[in-house]
Image (cartoon, rainbow, N blue to C red; front, side):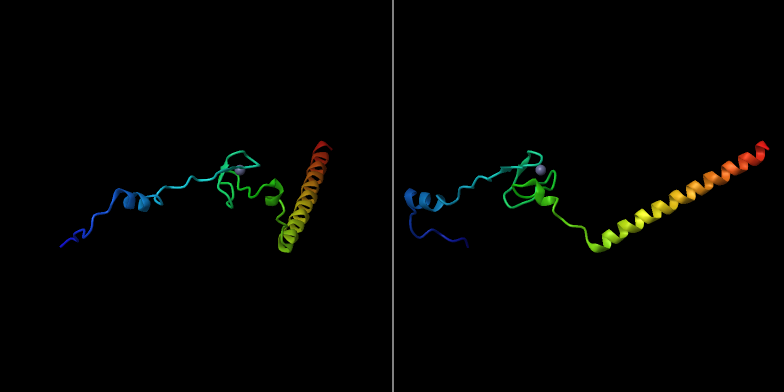
Length: 100
Ligand SMILES: [Zn+2]
């Protein structure tokens, strides 16, 4: 069986209880980078920027492994350039032979 109210709650009693039921407004800030709305202490959903300064996202330093990889990529690119030049030289020699 359902509970039956033992005593009458006055309007004042109900009002005092419900005085804490109001929802609070969400405080939004403006993103420095893109100008969109941002929740405090959260990264921007549009661009990923965090904090009042734009530089905070750009301060991430690359790890040593990534630097080595970059050097390897540069070396590979140089080797490819050399190969391409060698191919070009070989092709030009063949053309010279054909012309003769
Ligand atoms: Zn943003």
